[in-house]
Amino acid sequence: MRISSRLTIAIHMLACIDTFKSTRKVTSDFLAGSINVNPVVIRRLLSQLKAAGIVKVARGTGGAEIARPLNEITVLDLFTAVDCVEGGDLFHFHEHPNPDCPVGRNIHAVLDGKLLRVQQAMEAEMQRITMADIIGETRAIIAARS
Image 1 (cartoon, rainbow, N blue to C red):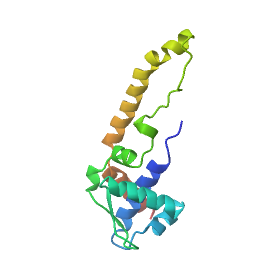
Image 2: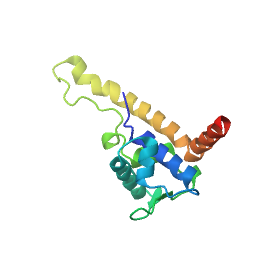
Image 3: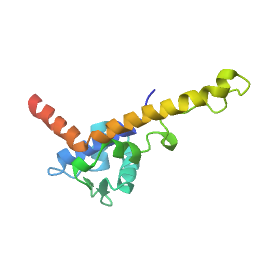
Image 4: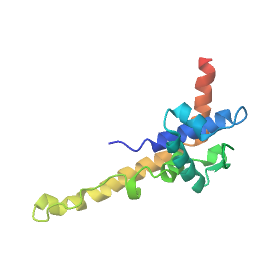
């Protein structure tokens, strides 16, 4: 199972915005170069992050900046902002199990609660990780490798 790469791209974007904020204008083209994706992908994600109140984006080539303190932005905030899962459900259950089959008739009753608990556990862990954690660790690794 894979969750959309939009989450890791959004995290990378915020790390770049914070890292380069005082040395350059952080544009969608610059972010696209760092992440190695099409700038259209970056602009779409910037729009979603802006709508969620996570970034501010100046018109034209004004660049992007982070709108909230890093310790107030969680991985779950980003996950939610960039729509990593369709309809908010991590697991997509097959639509029409056979009601004439004893397994098909009962599989939802068996799995729905369990899958919900798995998603809630993942979201709880994502809520504990902030962008301050991620950027702090990134800076430490960059400093150690310099």
